[in-house]
Length: 334
Image (cartoon, rainbow, N blue to C red; front, side, top):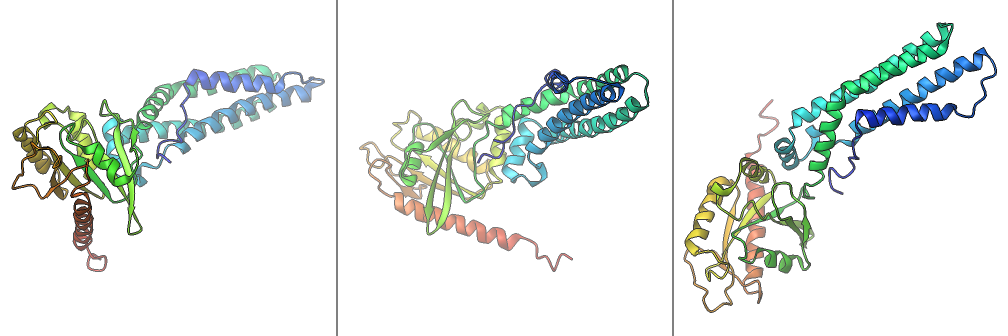
């Protein structure tokens, strides 16, 4: 399940006020007020019903957002880029404060109703106080709903070994993903790109792997990317990933070899991840062998695919061994 999927639409302050007060009025409709005691209880009940609707709705808003300190680093970085983690925390804290304040105010006014001669004015005053508290956090509610709509568009990227595919459009990246996963890849929406990120999965030796192609991020020069896109690229660093850069020496993709090489240089300079360079379309007559390429493949015939997969698995294992050797020893750090 996508990490932000369970966040529901966040209502505005007016929507919450209408919902709570209508529910309170409906709770009392049809009930006969026979004496003074039942009249006071009816006003108490209206106040507590409205307060409970408010506090339940506000508590649900806070609960449905994930704990940002426990988010996988990839999602934390993307959340921070898109909406700002600190801003989210502050708005959620404001909503949590409002929930607790409404409970406190309602309890206080229950006592005032019991001590009053006429309960209705006190209950109306209490409704005014509750509405005022809700209105004071409207900007937070609006921001949280906007954030929710943005975060729900993030791709469902699992915390598992990942192959990130880079290279110009039309070099055969999607065909590669389809061939190694044995299925049409899932296309998920992505806030940074006009095209959806392509995600596929495959299992090898009992381990599940993830393959990602991110159109609009790793398929054109850095100079053509805006600030948000550049920041999004840095988030990929936090995946347990290696990069497969695919080049098309036949130039049938529409991009010259020299342009493709320049993009390769940029990816190497901006990524601190292991990179495997492969040349696709080895089945084409205009295919040219390149000295710096580590493997030649054809996503059409399947040539070289198995060798590339073996090498990628080796690189993932090498990266993991290197990462574990660089982690500080707990005992020596005490």
